[in-house]
Image: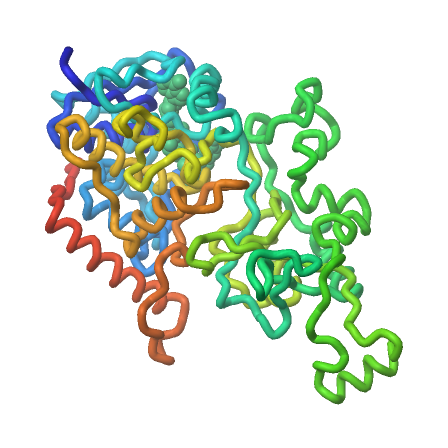
Length: 491
Ligand SMILES: Cc1cc2nc3c(=O)[nH]c(=O)nc-3n(C[C@H](O)[C@H](O)[C@H](O)COP(=O)(O)OP(=O)(O)OC[C@H]3O[C@@H](n4cnc5c(N)ncnc54)[C@H](O)[C@@H]3O)c2cc1C
C-alpha cells in the first residue's frame, strides 16, 4: 500500500498543511465535507472560506500578529501568499477579497499534482497505517468526528467552547497597589501564587456600575456556549441559561445582584492587603487610624485575582473574568480595577462555541499527538488556535512539514521559541493543561529580551520591533538548516 499524508478539513489550516506536505514530496489526500455537509457558519464550497470578517489582522512586523505573518511568509506559507495576492486597502491590516482568496486556494489545491481533494465528511479518525494524519477541522468540527476525537483523547480533553479570560503582561501591573498572596497563605510559592488587586467599597461600586452598563458582543445562536442542561435550548430567555454555571460571563454574574461578585470570584476572604495601617505613609496612617483605630489592617471589600498563565511567568489571567463585553469596553472597564490602570492586555476575554483539544495534555512541540502510536500518527488537531486568530491556524504549516518528514522517515521539526510561531506552539504544548484556553499571538509568550531596551526605545512599538528583530534572525538561522522556498502567487 502506498503511504500518504491524510489531511482532514480544507480551511486555512488544512490547505496550508496539505500544500506544505505536498511540496515536500508527499502524496496527500485532503478531505473537505463542504458543500455536501455544511458547517453552521460557512456559506459555500470553496476551500479556505473566511467566515465573518475578511481581515487577517495587523501586517506590521513590530506587532505580534504582523510578526507571525512575516514568519509564515518567509517559511513559504500558501495562505499568506494567497492573502498577499488578494490584498485590499485596509491601512496596516492584511484584509483580503475573500471570494478571490478562497477561489485561489481552491484552484491551487485542486491543480496540485500530488494532492487529491475528496469532498466527503470524515466521521472517524482515519487509519494511520497508511501514513500520518493531520486533523484540521477547525472550531466547527462536525459532531461525529468530534465524538471520535473525544474517544481518542479522552472526554476531558476536548472542549466545545472558549471561556476566555483577559490576560495582561506582568510588568504592566502596578505592584505598588496589587500584592502577591494565596488565600489563607495556602499556595505553592512562598510569596503567594496570585496577584491580588484590592478594592475598597467605593472602587467596587464604580467598577460594578461600569461593568453592568458596558456594551456586549451579540453572539449568533450557534456561537453560544452549550446550554447548561440539554433541555435548555439556546432560545431560552435567560442569558445565564446558555452558559455552564461554573463559567458564567462576569457581566452575567454581576447582573444577579451587587453582592454576586464580591461574594463570588471577587470575594476577599483569606487575603490581607499588606498595605496595612502600619505600613502606609504617616499621613495616610493617621487618617485610617482615626477611622479604624481598632482595625490595623486595611479592610478589603473585594479582590480581583490574577493567576500565572505561562511557564515564563510573564503573563497573568484575570480569574473568573470570562466575558462577552466588546473589546473596547473591556479595555475601559478593566482599567478601573486598582493596579490595572496601565495594564497591557495581550488577550481580551471572550466566550463562544469552539471545538478544540487540550493541547498541553495531548500534543508535542512537533504538533504530534503524544499518545498516538509511535508518535507518528496525528500531527494536528482542530481549533487549538485562538478562535479569533485565523493566522494562528496557519501554524499548521509545521504539521504539514512534519507529516511529510515522518512519511519520509525523517525526524519531525520544532520551531525556535524566539519566533512567534515557536512561542505559540510552546504555549499550547507547555501551558497549564487544567483550564487551558487557546491563545493569540502576543509578545508576552516570547522569552524576555536579554538586555533591557535603552530608555528612548521603551515604547510598545520599539519593544515589538526588538522582539521581531530577534525572531526573524532566529528564523533565518532555522531556515539555513531547513530550507523552505517562499511562495509567490501572481494574479
Ligand atoms: C462564526 C465564526 C466567526 C469567526 N470570525 C473570525 C474572525 O472574524 N477573525 C478571525 O481571525 N477568526 C474568526 N473565526 C475563527 C476562524 O474561523 C478560525 O480562526 C479559522 O477559520 C481557523 O481555520 P481552520 O482551518 O482551523 O478552520 P476552518 O476555517 O473552520 O476550516 C475547517 C474546515 O474543516 C471542514 N470540516 C469540519 N469537520 C469536518 C469533517 N468531519 N470532515 C471533513 N471536513 C470537515 C469544515 O467544513 C471547514 O472547511 C471565526 C470562527 C467562527 C466559527
